[in-house]
Length: 226
Image (cartoon, rainbow, N blue to C red):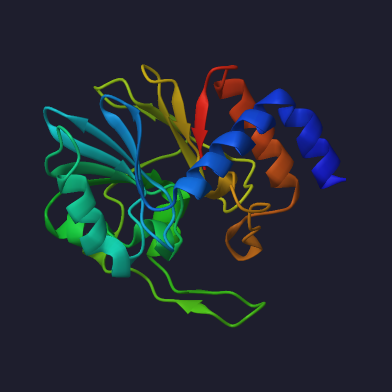
């Protein structure tokens, strides 16, 4: 039922997304350039990281795992027009998205997340289905700028909560309007159905609700980065 519903919700855009994902997978690790100032950084075994370069430095959407943080920073420094990172978005609390928080937090950079994500990062989390335990991040690594509904940066980049909880209850999207690129974290997966992290608010109905909500933000030319 979820599969059928999601197919109806997405229609033609799901074909475009599938094609983009297939292309990305075949190209493997490296840098995928989306525009003059927007890139997807792909490190083997890591989640996608979106990077926007500009005169003031680099904005990141997600930061990979802690083990890959050094490799990510080297990749960022090598981007055309790159510079030091000034802002990072955490699309949710999972460690494969927040591994660069401590490095950037100690450097005084802005870490943006939904308030629910900050709360999860400030407490210990245990997944009851497999016993895996995640320790809270130190204060310096926790998001230092949070929101509840939507927000917008001076650069024009907008962001918002995905309250349907397709993945967690702190999912967010980041929309680059000029480039018409929508970064969606793990609310959309290029490899399988999104993981439903019900320990931190995700639920199965949120998969469909989240996709429906993202459809209202996108048009037929929007490129979606899962």
